[in-house]
Length: 371
Image 1: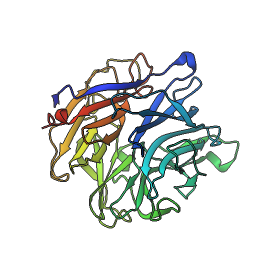
Image 2: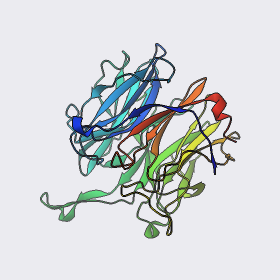
Image 3: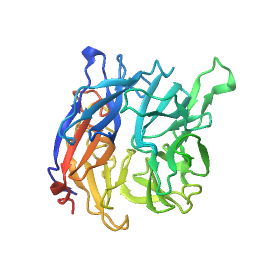
Image 4: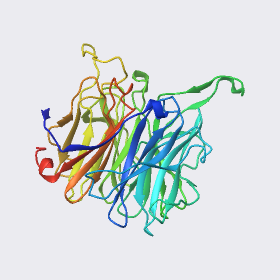
């Protein structure tokens, strides 16, 4: 593993407990029609940093190619959504030029689904929401994970967790099974209607892990040929493949990417290369934990590139290495002259590795250091 100074941090969204803003978390980017860059993220409010604590969707804009970002404004509130929490955002340009905003709505401890709203005026106003996961359940979709395939299909990779009430009585305690399976939802009409894909993926060694396949992502290798991946607690990301545009999938198997139970992010550059960002060093017996807060082994944070469509990758280059911090939930956004990365970057001062979001701008000349 090599270490390099790659680009500079151009924005940090730090928690402000005195303003009852305990966490600023996972986000996504999009180009606006006037050339500005929109970044949206989850802005938590109140006192809690947990995933089920109240959160709104906040937006900031860059007018200088990602060199700086302006003040934030709330796009949607959890109260408007009649939700406990809204988070895990993806942005897509829609066929008619609208902004497509995808987000998770946590309604109860056992019910979470993904919705889509559209904006035709740069995010000033939004359409009525459309349900993208047309089944009742608890679906986890990471930020920056919704993809449009080469034939126009929009695909959502989701982890589904078994939930319910013990004994079936409304007064009984609820349960949530950490061992998730991967399912996929798709739209072939630009997000107006949604279907569940026929196939799903389960961990083949479920008796030996407590994660199952969590927080999946997907990358199109060739038209109709997809590469899926998911985090596990077995020391590696697991991978699966589809040869029919995401309808059915191969069995999950260990990938080349070692990792703790922390997500991998992959995305294709405008020039065709595939970039991967992840935590390559898993937690293991003997590795010293240097902080009292949760980091989940999510340091260092590295980036690698494949120039042969995923057959091989360069050695991971570390760009964040503080041992008492955690780095995770990366959004990648490619411009002609740079790559923008947005990711969680909290440490002891923030109280959690999930509480702060950082935007790093990496010029093209720095990307050439990744060899």
